[in-house]
Length: 364
Ligand SMILES: [Zn+2]
Image 1 (cartoon, rainbow, N blue to C red):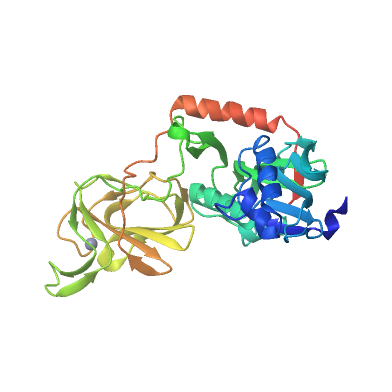
Image 2: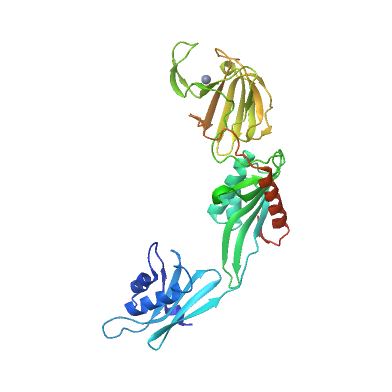
């Protein structure tokens, strides 16, 4: 086919095929006819679609006929437009496509996203896989083994199109394993459901912090007059009032980096999370975890008390990112998003069906 001499143009956002063909230098009649023919086959080719155009020599008046134009509205179909006398004819060329998912397994190593990039997974997909796993696990460790399954379509002609992440598993040396299945939630939205989670299932909290204790915030973040020291002092967290002995829950999944006496903070627990975030919980009556423990979001890590520099039972809660105290945002996520037993059961069936398929393996 003489497409080698053609121009390659990319359909711009909001641009019609006619406009693209005019941009290529084609005459108006041919361009309009080409668009009419294509619109009978596919619904408006998407922005980003490549169109190869080969024009004939200029006619009197300057317009040029479309000798040949080719576009591929999707992986499985090529449309070829060819001039035939005064007319243009359209030919459909179907390309066989198989949809064997890709599977990618390996060690997390120092940076999961770059490991996935080396294995040829595009950066957005690699980043989202890392985020999904890190959020659910509360941080990744080099020895953890990952197992990812990605939807894919492979054309007989060699091209590949990757779809969404369908499954993300983590085999952890130092904590419970994860099996996160992409699940359709209400309103056509998707979320990842951990089929190994607690009996009711759990969904990684999408961004918000879980409120560590129920209760009113009695002192906010920032400058305040310290009730005991009796001078203005920067308050690096928030205080939440709660009765002595109330269980304190981890605001996010993470691992324990400190649990014990910490001077003015009294008994304190500090958790490290993915993305260089630390949460800390002070003035506890008692701690319920040890350094190195891995905790799920919502796990009890200690109990409210009034130890250290404190006027009465409350929780002093801090969030640090890259070492800097930031105002904690206790959003709408008062508890991990509830996942119904039916959704977990469905996700489990989905996973069983998925794992029984054949895969194309990528080296991780
Ligand atoms: Zn405080």
